[in-house]
Image (cartoon, rainbow, N blue to C red; front, side):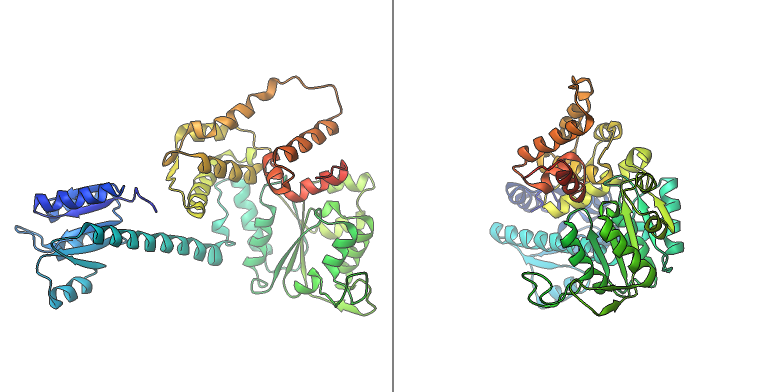
Length: 450
């Protein structure tokens, strides 16, 4: 429960006003008081009160109904509870008709007040959570929900709109954590396929055999354990979009299979003899330079050109520093709500720390850093000390580097992260500032068991 949600008590009787304020303060709430309606409205203009207790009969000027209406004019979300010593059906009807959430009768019972406040604040918390969920469901993939004021990112968002209804293949390049999937979703949900499926496949997380079955499905009896026919991701995405993340990690065989799908929009299920035809738009993403991979013979040149019809290169977070404050505030608001922890924002000193960091894990790393800070935060505002560990990590530039190959250093870092996280790949990838699919790829490359 958000105990620091402010409450206002309005009553011309000092004893009544202070008694109710004292009861609420004992429950841990922040409480302000006002002796009349005019003062109450002044306070409401300055403070976003969650609940206002307002006496119905106040001599000289505004009565309780008028005060409630003025408070609602400046704070429409405030819950107003009318207090009356003369409860009748008529007064109750009038109070509720004009916008009161509840009314209570003097003399007030402290236990009744506590239960009423707790119930209202629980409802407000649910309403806040529902509003966030509705926003995720209805607006998450619209362009204005990609948080940026960086010119390059704004150009990319304009491009996603222009290409959204085309069937042309899109290749999104960018470092891990730059938001490649978010841009892919922006393309899909802005176009004429928005009502159709958007299917995500992480190409780095699966072995060749499993990835083949995942993409194309399989027939009953195709292999041990294939007890029934299973549709693959391409079939499930029919009419919509398939997003192939870390496309640079697929095997030569799957590169050939994928090339055929791009050319003919047809494929066979594993163990099948009947062709399956689909209408699917392909959006691929990679953190590798596929042109170099082609030169080194690691990636098919014909597949590269088929994928690279429209290329989008996402800038790293260090190339869009002006977005850090916007993203940080967004993550604070969203994560604090999801965790049920009251954190209102981030201080200028803390932002200075974030702006000075290199962000090798980009936006995903920033999100993880904010979440860690919120979890350990002891105040209602993230401050510099909440990121002291990040500053400490940034000062480790002068460590003595052993004279070993770079790959060995990376392998040691991965092993150390897995040991610290007790083999948890998700937590280890977050600590390393890379996504899980990239970490799985490196685990295979360095033959690390976990």
